Image 1 (cartoon, one colour):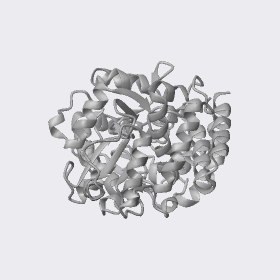
Image 2 (cartoon, rainbow, N blue to C red):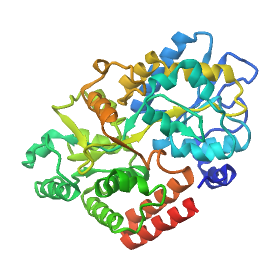
Image 3 (tube, rainbow, N blue to C red):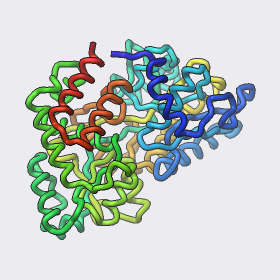
Image 4 (cartoon, helix red, strand yellow):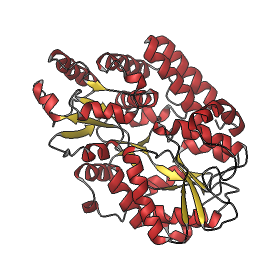
Length: 426
């Protein structure tokens, strides 16, 4: 299941040209000989994500005023460009001091290539196993070791709703449809009422996220989880049903979706030109920055058919082998796992803290619903955001989903999904 990182680097090397980031030492102003620096590699380069990073850096500067923060962010939604640049740097033995990665299966390629340090002792030193929930520790642990520290928890099965647009079509925005079929019926009502694009959608990874939401709705938590260990077949009747419904959903999206990143797709909803957008809860910051209030101009529900399920992902940070500033990197990991760091970051970004000792009263109305769901609902791992499948497997699925957006060939998509699983699980 785990692929060689050298193979991955070769497959992704073309993405380096998009980043404008040299693989040479000091390309981001970092000096390997200066111990009081830390180069932090992320894809939080703009928008609400950059706001969250800035809030976290402020806490880091307060806790470690003698360490210079070197921002090595590479733009691109869901980290596609960043992952390509990172693969090339790791292959060239030029790692940053720490890099952002989605917790879960996405780390498996780096671990298999022996490019990450075991952080289990840091967890012991900081007492993180006492303040992170067992469900999270389980998802972070590989063969008894932990290789990353999460800065947050995100939920990927969230449908964002423009309340006025739905009311204009005679739809109650406070009540989620019971399942995907009922939601499709409401989408048709919106279209009939004059809304050209009832469902806002964006580029390839947002399409994959929409598909995973439909899979969760139709397969349930156990059936969806079985996709990743082979116990659920990718050509099962349930998967074929989900692909058919996903195909129907594409009939209601904006025509320019393939060229839009997540924030532009979410903006369509904020502007009142769509009724719905399926997006992770990083979108929360976009609504609040637009001056909108949860429960008034917009609301949220678990994607129809997924109530009682929390589709999990987490942004986490690693300690690469050969990190030039290892002590400073551990200081960064200490900040992002601290109560102060998690509060500052998650209040700004719209996600929720990984720590169980956080006070829900510190967070907004949407975030309170996510905190409650993560504590009480069934947790599954996100495909589109690295928790469910390795980078290589996720990449194969992404390519198949992108192709489907052009040809709408359900049989071809199923065939490609089966082939991707066979390759990953062999």
